[in-house]
Length: 286
Image (cartoon, rainbow, N blue to C red):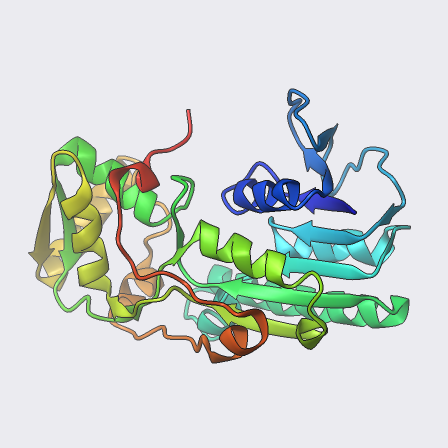
């Protein structure tokens, strides 16, 4: 069995490749940078916009990177494959009515990419499944909890606005890799999208507090009145460390972003772990 993987060196791709290799699959992986050969993996240097020469037939294709880029490639690629599994994001639902135009654009691109994938697969007689993670963690490569941990390590404190009690479901990269692997021979998952949240629902404040508590040494959570937090955020932006924390993102800290594991549990046997952070989960790869 042979698989093509985009994003094989990323936070979800690495554990997914491990599962495929353990199951005896041969893996073709596309990377922007040159990589050393390893047993069971053939690395191809390139990208979705500058594809290298790869075989034209696979048993499965996995996309663990940007969904819109993958959808464009798949629409025009002369490749034969009956099974496609791609990661999107729950941001398609969360940000579609955001007051931030850039966030609305992200949501629109995700939704459009899903439509393109399903339409292209139907034309080719292929089975496609889209998995929509919530807040990803576990490999030190995410843009939220790892960044929080990094800032907290340097300053031994991390500020949040008071009232940051919106519910979250952080999901571990290994659980996402399990979900993708479970799609391969699963007819029930064909032509469907699944939300794949983590196994515990907790307040934003509690999620951050657990990250801070697991650091060595632990860092302190500092809750600030909104005007003071806004002032601190402006200062962070001036120092170049507040990227991604606009007004819409801060407002969402008070909103419940909760998704149902039921469909993925029913069709994929999806059983994600509770949120039990360890320091190594937030250490960027060297």
